[in-house]
Image (tube, rainbow, N blue to C red; front, side, top):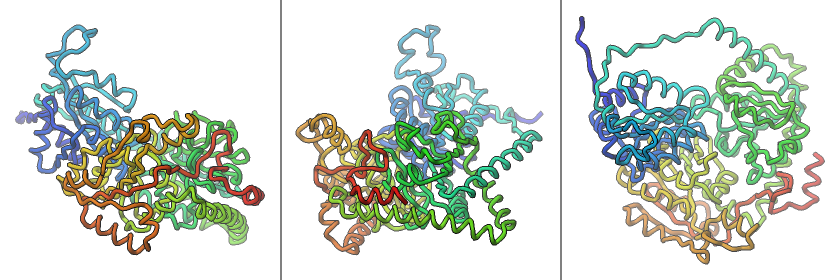
Length: 607
């Protein structure tokens, strides 16, 4: 009989995660998680990154997952530490980011047999109950023998299907117990006969969808957050877009799939803040919309689905069967399938069509598509021209100018607020740039810690865009950025107000700026001084100076900051900024403020 090999449980967890390719660990030290952190420190393959609030660790792990498409890990101690992870857990859940959250917990022998007891011990909180509604799987480990199987299970759940967060609660004594390595059984994998049969059915379904799109006169491809974040997958998607040759629109979280100058890129849909030409094309012009990995929720298509694209056939491909139960049209067609599997099938079918299609059919098909693309171009050019001269959209033009000074390959992390809208609508993304933000959760404080995780996922420089409100939500993580000397540049667009809230207060509260402006009890600090206190390179410049300068001068200014990163630039703004274009409640989502002339709108509606 061979010698039994026993490994400390916390060592086993770290080694298991490293073997899965997870080598960066984000968290904060604490008594109940100390064994696990010690095991990170002992493993030469693992790298520990200490935050200054556990929410920062959670968002860093989410940023890592969103930037790379790979699984990330965040940890915290019990009670208050675990609770501080919750906002990041929710963000991962709503935006489908694969993150494993590990929390320390009270020793199992400290629990009583009184379930009604308010607290079982010091810093004990039932984190499993708290996190169960915002995780794909959530469980406390009470027997060390369960650990190997549970680790395999949580990794598989986090990274398969519609990806998302999982949580394991680890009592302190479980972390220090030993695992019998020989008892860990490997599982065999392979495709069954039934899976092969199902694959044939899937190919037929994709073929039918492709035929419908090819026979449409005015098709649109709508791409959302369900598209893979892995760069090799995104290259395949871009290649298929070029082969299909039809106009593409995206959700906010899909905004960076195509560069701004791509001839098929027709912008971002949004019932409140989308591009007006995108909303017009989707709502009034298209006769077929193929949506892939896009929720088509009210924030994208409006509160009344019947008013969205009434003349169009809606075809939806999504891995989440439950999401598809929220219908847009009663006669829509749906396919439950992973987006990348769909694109791989599509790639094969397009190759077959290329070989089998006659030249006569090709000419007829492309003639129809070219007419449709001309309509799209006309709508975009005329409406963009209106926005270029609208005085209310000065901040959009500022964002465009900023974007032209950012090198390709940079990751862009936006927070939540007016600046997020300006970034999504007016930042001219380049081919290798990525756009990360908090989508479904809409969490202020996302961008600074998410930028840290995004850097470690890609080892690429990161530009953070945030407002004066969101910058302060996790401002303590500037110390993390400084400590590890990360190439992160933070632009704080400081208008000394909570901009989106002030817009709402102007609209429905008669301009009473309670909690949103100085007269309502809200103030902001001098962020340049804060940057310098943390040891960052800090500068202040006004939005007016940026707009008055030649592009080359501002590019040099920003390049100097990024070269000296970590750095923070405070951009002082006028205090009455507005996020435009904006749909007014009750108006069709393509008729947005600031309004274009009725003559132009009537002309475009006739196309």
